[in-house]
Amino acid sequence: MKNLKKIQMHPLIKNIRKPAVCLLLSLAGLKSHAQEIITLFPDGVPNAKPNEVVETGADRGLYKGVTNPTLEYIKPENPNGTAVIVIAGGGYGVIVFNGEGLSTAKSLADKGVSAFVLKYRLPSDEIMVDKRIGSLQDVQQSIKYLRENAAKYGINKDKIGVMGFSAGGHLASTAATHFEKSYIANPENTSLRPDFQVLVYPVITMQNALSHGGSRDNLIGKNPSQEDIDLFSNEMQVKENTPITWLTHAADDKVVDVDNSINYFEKLRKSEVEVEMHIYPKGDHGFIFKHPGWMEPLFEWFKRNNLL
Image (tube, rainbow, N blue to C red; front, side, top):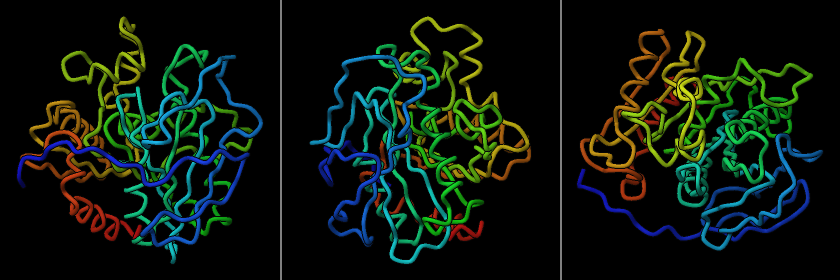
């Protein structure tokens, strides 16, 4: 594969602000009946504090200042029962919502997978009491909501996974390794464990040698404690019950070192967690924008695991 260059991402759709749940016109070229915007915390966002932050980036599909997290549902024509929560990256400083989120959701929906793109709160002392856990709360609430409303969306409550890119990969792997502790209200004791995780050039570790500095600073601060460094180094949180995993990365990634994926693979393998990894020799960070066939090995993995 030729060395890939960064390209400018164009918005697929402009944000339309609506209360709680609303229906939108489908994306151009997307094989779906409609989109639904799901407000994750209609009764009040946890871990929030009063602020005057205004959400921006709808015109470019690069969100900042999210204070009201949502899921955007991309409905396939023929749902097969599998659901994926798509978590775009951006270094925990922005959300590449259209480029990594909606575009990936379209490809999933074309295969019959129900895709839910997460617009999550980015770590911020301005809007959160504890910025370390706000994004994780949004993912956990997403899993809880979908599991409790599986029948509504025609999905199997035991086939709900997370898919993350870059810093979104860190968030997805956090959800996949920290699920035994609920960071949200969960009186129903609904399982918060994803059934599978798909990680694309993910940030995994917060350890100095390999961590992506921007993601680390945004999430746990410029002078984090060793306890926080270890807690959010997800390779250190792998257990036997960590969900099955699919990883992909480029060996020449200059933004997030490929050893993030390799070390995570090794921890999963040694814990006897089923894991598959695809490493491209070239492509750098964000290679998906220049390599349209990158999802074909993923779909084969889906088939082998009865997800497609």
